[in-house]
Amino acid sequence: MGLAEDTKKLAEDIVASYDLRVKEIRKLAKDTQSMLKEFQGEQKGMAAELKKTFKQEEADRLKAEADRIKAFGSMKNEIQAEQEKRNKAVADLLEKFAKDHEAMANELRGTLAEGEAERNKAVADLLEKFAKDHEDMAAELRKTLKEGEVVRLKEVLNLLQEFKTEREKMAANWQALTAAMAKRRSIKLKVETEVKARPVEEAIKEMEEKVTPETDLEEKVLEFIERHPEGVRVGDIEEPLGVPRMRLGQVAKRLLKKGDVRREGNIYFPL
Image (tube, rainbow, N blue to C red):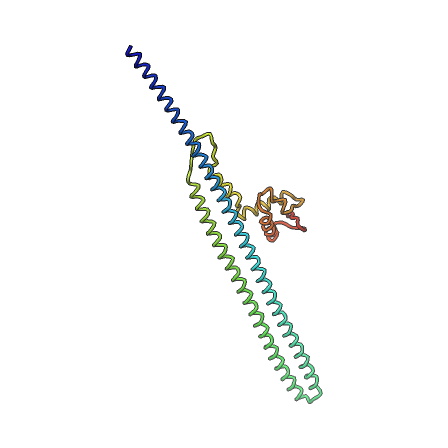
């Protein structure tokens, strides 16, 4: 009789222990689901923040490039104005030279009626004066052209130095961002559950694929144009490549400048 009671009590303890474990397991599963939902929300927030950061970086880069193009246009206009001034100065010098030459020719013709000796001496004096005036004008002309060339070269060198400095800063910023993203990608999270959470690495990779390097983008745009011998507009490339139309327009202009494509109106054709 005691053995039956012990067996019954053991069975009751087993059932109670089982119910307790089931209860604990359910609580653990609930806590796990809550943790996964919280993690998924944080992951979406991080992905949105990364997207915003990349978008801002792209907007800043395009603005900086537009500012450089504007500055280059202003400098080009200044160089053209300076060149026009030099051309006017040269024209004035040539006009003065022509007038002096005509005056000396008239003076020379006036002395032809005088005696041979006086005529020869006058001719020699006029030729000497003509040679000296010609040498002075030539020296002044060379000086004017040289000064203009030096100023133009100095302005171009300064512009190139500014472009180089800006490009180095952008490269350094991009390398720092790449290093930060690589550090984030090195953190691996693995949770086995029925709730499929999107990995941070996948979100970062997707954002990096959207920020395509300029060289790769030029190759993709050129390849797209070459596949369409009938010609394409910039708007036709926007959806297939997933790149803003403004950026594609700049890439197409660079390809046109390099001679990789040709343009008729607003349509680009392969060569």
